[in-house]
Image (cartoon, rainbow over all chains, first blue to last red; front, top):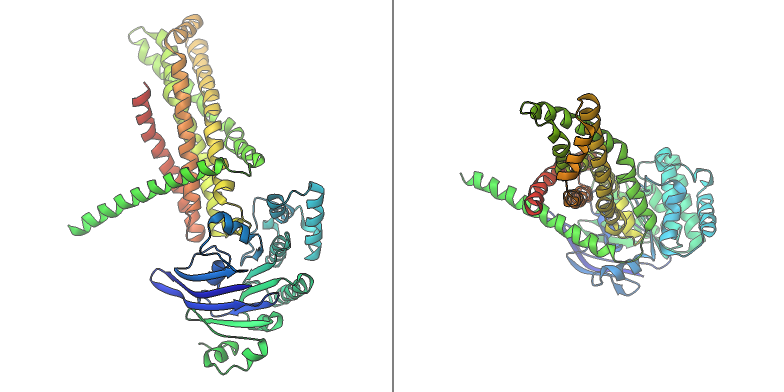
Length: 242
Length: 256
């Protein structure tokens, strides 16, 4: 269970998160939507402890990560996997080494076992043939898939997705959406997705929350969000300026 | 007038901030050096990068430095008939100053800049955030192995550089300018002590620390995308080079 209580965050005198409250459902796909620059990625970075709030509390399975030291935070982070906006693959390593990295760091598995898991994760994202390629040799969509394979390497309980379809063509977007849904069906983990892609959001989400002016102004199932009376939500999902 | 003082104050605060940041990074790296996990393969890779891959460029620089030094001092000493001092003056200059400083400057240009660029690129492309997410401390994984490699490999490179510079000087002095080989070597033996070589190697250890620390610090504090990476790389080379010269003066004052 992820719970954010009264989170405030200010960057250069601009209030990005303003007494934000949010509860993420366990083992569901929650998509946070909002305009570019609204602070969606900032919110995600708070959930995984990459940014600290000015005030407020963030509970991960009951542990307030704003009050623990780095060592304990690292233990909490082992529950997470994350797919970054630009994949954030280590460009000095091959694709296979990228996927193997968390396994080498946090398990005592033999090289053979690690190789088997890497092969399994890469074949799951249909990229078993690129294990020896460098990330720079891959397309944007392939990089996202490898990023997902790396995020899945340790079978985390929670997976965060930062704009998983940004910068991709519509066909690749669709395939990434399908992959997210298939991955959820297979892992039944808690997924938190940040997106401004309405079509993609309604395709994958069990629950949708809208971030506006530093607050979650509406949260509900896709059906509830589609029928919302909130004028800001209405305009956003109809792709009109808010 | 107030603006002038504001500017001076801003520069002063900037320098203090940078020095504070470098010091904190140094302390943090030292602490992480003692904590498991110990990634020997990562440290060995950095030693290869800083040390082994710098050998050719360092030795070529040393060879020609020694040759030029012998040529210049020969013509100077010849005017008052003291050609026999070419060998010891070369050996003293190389072991005390030229070897450590030139080696550090070459490694700064090759490896220090690359560290700033590589870590800076990792910063702006969220690869450092990815390390955090995977519960891997970036100071321990990226900075500490580089600093350790600098501290260990710079004295090794400097020792090789000292030797090759003297060989270059010997070749020019003895083979080309007809200085007596026995006098050349005897005078070196007579006037250059073990402490000259040792102090030079201590200096190079300090330079190794400075160039890697500055390179990593600039990399890890990179902002503003590709432009920021370029700026960090340039600053790493300039700041490390200046810091090497300043610390060289301080160390020379203390040691010799």
